[in-house]
Length: 265
Length: 201
Image (cartoon, rainbow over all chains, first blue to last red; front, top):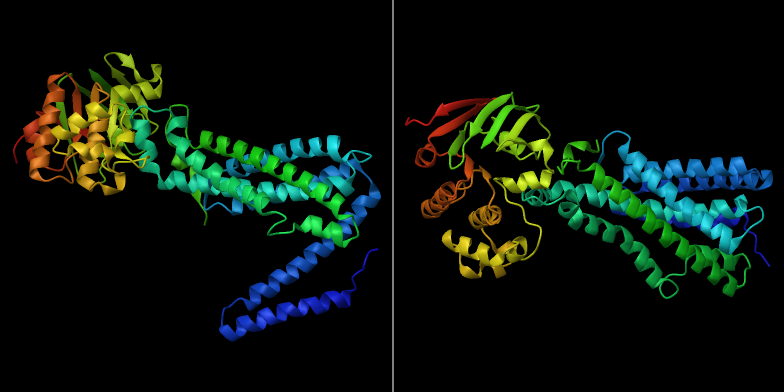
């Protein structure tokens, strides 16, 4: 049995935002405006996505599904760029982030769709698009964090890196500490969220499935599958993007090339 | 030993000079004139054009790490990548002996890096390069933060290196130091490198 929501129900819940807004005005936090804008954006964006998904599921076209997936990937690439204070100049930053995420998400999703979920047809948008959304969202956070950490640390630790290079170490040895640091920083949230899952946090997707009437045992299995896909894609994407960035941050003569970074304006 | 012809970078105008085995050449000039740029270009730490040869071997014909082991740059600002001092040295025993010669305590290898003063870091960075016995040393103000006694110890050690046949290029702001160590100097102004003889005044 599914309890359907009416727009009046949403409006009542939306009143909570007014409480937050009032608090901000009373304490002069300056958050009332951004709060309002963010809430409006969420409502508009999600409503549009609802419309798009409804059409997409009805049309059952592999090409439109692929197109939607590409649009999501391009937005994710934009988002990873925005999270880096210093990034590789030119198309490198966008290309590396988007390429790594796209490859990782594709591998993981094809694996999930062809072995575990097996919808018919295999590209069925009802399965592929939501799964891609979850996988890509997490890979995006991971890749953004990895590249931000990598470029910021390389700039900060320039003296340490160049001291090793000057003593005759290779670029891979000299940059290994910052690569390790970036990978750890990027993968920690995924590891932590898996460790706390079920005990501290009930994941959104599982809760959603339970609320919409799915048997909890079934919802849990889906959640576990999704978590494996998410950590797989995040790990692959983070590793690929980080290695490519280390390569671009140095050159064949084993120099540190901070001149290839630009600061965000 | 080290022969340089038309070495240039976006900052450095084409420079041609040579450095013989056992010779010390002082690099002088105002701050920001391009002295560090010259040393970094020689060590191949920044892209440069021109021809640099060590005993006839062209720089580009050997892997960059090997080149830098033979032609080693010691920056004015030392860099550290491990927590413990000793972890930065391939041969801690030999490094400890050299550190002792520079007036550093014997236990310095067990210290955390954070405990070192600027002058101690500078001397240890020099030791780090010396234990690898490079053929050419490119030293960027190695005694900048040091007192007179420590400076004397560093200079004594450098004389030893010269005696073993190493070539030394040393950036210094102290004219007396140039006089003590070098007979020739390179004067750098606005990226132009000029060869000359070290004279008083």
